[in-house]
Image (tube, rainbow, N blue to C red):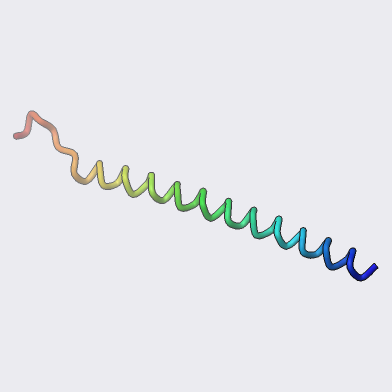
Length: 50
């Protein structure tokens, strides 16, 4: 019976780790997109001004 509790706890911990890593990956992707957009806006110029 102790093994069942241990295996259940391990499976639950694994699921939490997977969900945390997935959330972290999504946040990194969002930050990457935001950085690219900000950089594009900072570097963008009208061709008429030149």
